Length: 152
Image 1 (cartoon, rainbow, N blue to C red):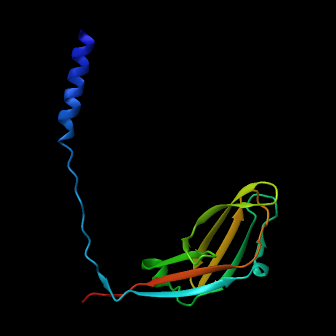
Image 2: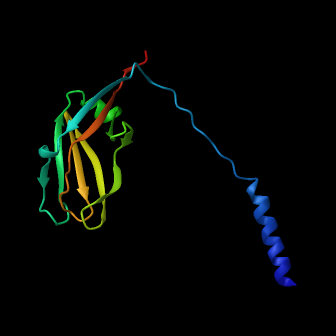
Image 3: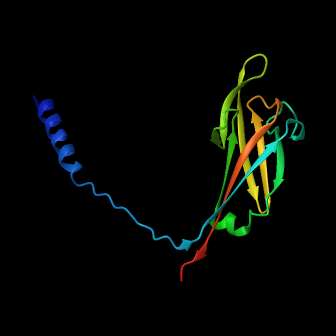
């Protein structure tokens, strides 16, 4: 009997305390205006990927670098760079994008990601077994959000 009374008292306290939860939300005023978005498509040819690291060892991947003067310090500090893999059906798949590929023996995971620094976009492909499996060309969509000016 004691167990039932203790259980009921505990449940009553739990239900009573639920009403005391308060949520607060913050609102932010947009302090920039005139934000521009630069969009470009790039083709990453299968023959142009460069190998980094030792094949079959951790840290092995392939990469391509592309020059983008639109990636400025302002973009890196208060803007954004978004990159999408455009598949054969024309769909945009945001990076990083991880999906299985057949290496001829088993399915392995392939990770396509990117890195940015001022003026340079680096596309990176790596596989879970650290081997190189580039087959064909890839198309990417690059969106660069350039911050606007301060409101006066």
